[in-house]
Structure formats: structure tokens, C-alpha cells
Length: 419
Image 1 (cartoon, rainbow, N blue to C red):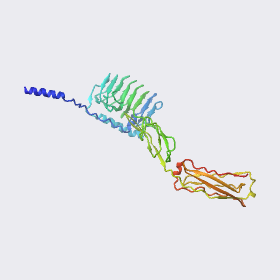
Image 2: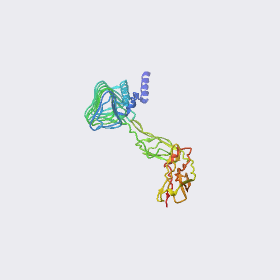
Image 3: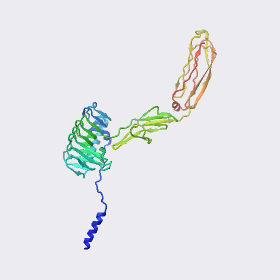
Image 4: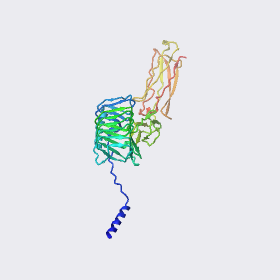
């Protein structure tokens, strides 16, 4: 009687204990490395397309033979037996080997679909398999849920079949390790990253959200839509110089659904300080970083400048034509190695006036200017003499900041009128 009471008490206690979920711990997804940016890639075969296939992501072949783009369109880069494709090839095969080596998966039948619902797990199919109708992957509210399918043989979908994702499932977290060839039938809609050891055939109008990557076969495409799901990196541009004086600014534009490294999410930002500026685009499939633009602000102190001395022009009127001409003296500026002005050459035509005064102002940024006045004394002499005028400005110590102020100063020199 005492034993019976003990058993009854134990049963009651066990019934009151909350249920504990001993669900299998999910393995991490494979590391794709530089293969992550690819939507279609083969390590040992050609990649051919016919028709209006549109691929979002990179495409490539490690051995060459990428054909059909155009008419196909790639929103990404094409790598045909180049350095990038050579680096991607071993990473694709390593990822395939990782998925193949996961142990302890749940064994299921080789015919998938027909409304079948699966939850996150590693599923093992022991031989060549097919997908008929719809296969529903239910993440049960977990956006990080991972589905891995290990298929020990070829794999094919039937016409119009589909993989359906519900309750937070993402095709970025679905992986198909297929030990053989893959055929996605006409009009089928497939989701997930395919890592195969055979040829991949994506037939007429089939769509793939994910990737088609193979270690051991060619790939052929036929009027398909394929996307690897990664965000498209923004392209940042500047509306003007990116080096300017303190107090200046430049507008950087091009953010598309991303976030600036300043924390702003607007399409453009106004930058007034030195720094490296870029945009990060993120979605459930990964991260893309835009090009970066370096902005530099310089100190705004004006250089020291000095006015030139008065000069004398000498000429002999008796040997010159009548006063019907005009002489002008152009002046130009150079910033290297320091600010200086080219010598002024005055032709030998005497003006009527005996004294000419010229005045000008050099402006270096807001509130920084110097006004110079120079007297030109005209004297008669024989024979005619052309006098070379001294440089107009003394060189400042810092020529870098001078560039901050934009246009070089323009020096206006009066004409020598004959009257």
C-alpha cells in the first residue's frame, strides 16, 4: 500500500514539472568567404546562358567559359577564369564538404513536397531525390532558423514546384548539399543556396532565390531570375571638392536603404569635418559596404602677402609710332612651389600720362584681403627700354592653405592709353 502511494505521488510530481525542450542544437551555416557575393558559380565547368536571364549577384567560372551575358543581365560582376574566381573555387568546395560532413541529421523520404511542412533541422535523404508540388519550411518565428538538406544523389524539381517559406524563414538560411546533378524544372520556384557536386541545370523560366554553386559540373541558365539576396552596395558621390578650408562643406549622396557611418539614414549628408565617410547596407542575407570618400578640412589662416614697390617705365617717344596703340600687362598666378606672380612685361609704347596708379585687392577667404596700390612712373629715355616689373607678391610660408580659398586672385592692371 505504501509503495502504491509512492508511485502515485511520483506520477503527480512528474506531471507538474514543466516540459523541457531537448531540441537538437542547430549547426552553424557554412562559411562561404568570397563566394558569398556570387549567385552562380562553377569550379570546373562552363557557365552558359540563353535568353533574358537576370542575375543579382556575381557570376563566374574558375576555368572559363562564361557565355550569354548579354543578352543576360548581371547586377554584379562577371569573373571568368580570373584571380577572383580562382580564390572562390576552393571556398565553394570547402563549404560543400562542411555540409556533407554534418552528422546526426533527421532521415526523411526522398520525395519532398506535396504540401509537406518541415521545421528547422538537418535533413538527410539517402539517394537521388525530387521535389513535387510545394515544400513548406516553417521557421516557427525564428528568423535565424537554419534548414540543411543533405541529398546523397541527384536532385530534381518538377514543373511548377516550389519551396515556400513561412513564419520568419529566410532563403538565406536554407542550404542544399547535393551529391550529384541538380535540375530546376520549368517554372519552378526554388529557395536556398545550392552546393552541388555535379552539373546544375536551371530550365526555362525557373526562379532561384539563393545561389547555384557547384564543385564538379557546368551550369546552364534559360530565361531565369536568380538573386543571392545580398543587399546592393550604395555608390557614394560628392557634389564638389572634398578638400576645403574649415567652415566649408561638401554634400555626399547615394545612400540607398542603408546607414551612414555617422548614424544618419538620409540619402545625402552635408560634411563639414575631416573623416572617412561610407554607407553600410544590411539585410537578412548579409552586409555590403559602399565605397568610401575621404574629406579633408584645412586651417583657414590667410597667408602673409606684401605689396610690390613702385616701378618705372622708360621709353623714347621719338623712336616710337604715334600714340595710337595700347599696351596691357597681363599677370598670372602660380601656387607652386609658393605663391608668386610672373613678371610683367611692358611693351615700349609710351603712355601720355607721366604717372599711372594701379590698385587691386587680393581676397583669401571670407574676411581676409589685402589692398595694394602701385605707382607707375613714366620717363623718357633713348633708346627705348622695356622694363621687367618685379614680382607682385611675396611667397607665404604655407601654400597648402592657399588652395582652400578657391580661385586664384585676379590682378587687374590698367591699360596704358595713348590718349
